[in-house]
Amino acid sequence: MSRRPASPPPPAPPAQSVSMASRPPRRRAGPTPPRAPDVVLPDLDVADRSVLLSGRWDCALVDGAELAQARLEGLVVLESSVEDAVLDGALLAGARVTGSGWERVSAVAADAARTQWADVEVTDARLSALRLVGARLDRVVLRRCRLDGAVLRDAQLTDVLLDGCDLRGADLTGAQLRRVSFAGSDLTDADLAGARCDDVDLRGATLEDLRGADGLRGCTVDAVQLVALAPSLAAHVGLLTL
Image 1 (cartoon, rainbow, N blue to C red):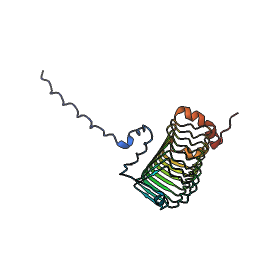
Image 2 (cartoon, rainbow, N blue to C red):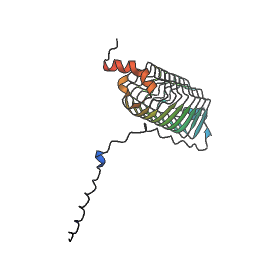
Image 3 (cartoon, rainbow, N blue to C red):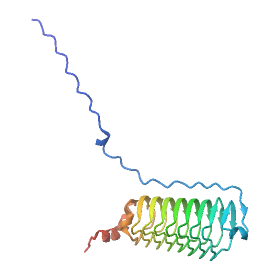
Image 4 (spheres, helix red, strand yellow):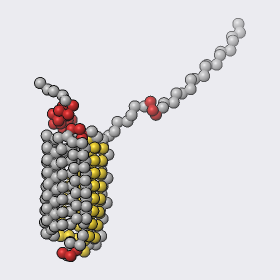
């Protein structure tokens, strides 16, 4: 008996393309870290008293200057090094600091409102109660600085690293923070009410009694910090505990 030739197998169904839109979104590894400042100092000239009061420090070495209570509104600091200077209570409103390094400076209760800081490194500075209202900080590093009671109301911080800084009781209400890290810093009793945050890293910071829970959107914390923040978050959403 003759056999009928076997029918060819049916064609395989075309492979279905997977739309990128149908894939689950990738989980971010964490907040984007701040970009590092670009500080390369040229050969510096030692600044004498006339330079210090001229309103412009350009490629200057300001070492041990006594400028407490000085009126330095609109001061311009370009590619300079400021070391061991005393600026307590000084008026620095509207100053502009670019490409500079500040070490062991004391500017307690100085008025630095509306100042602009770009590509600046500040180390071991005493800046308690410093007023930075409406200031702008871009690519700035502050290491081991005392900023307790500092007022950064309505300030703009972009690419800022605060490493091991004391920010107890600092006022950050209404501030705009983008790519800011508070590694090892103390934010006890600081106020973030009305702040707008984007890529802000609070991991490793002390957040006891932090105020202004509404300003925490856009911040990253760890699980232990979340427990410390629970009372503030509960009060913000009106959660009652019995």
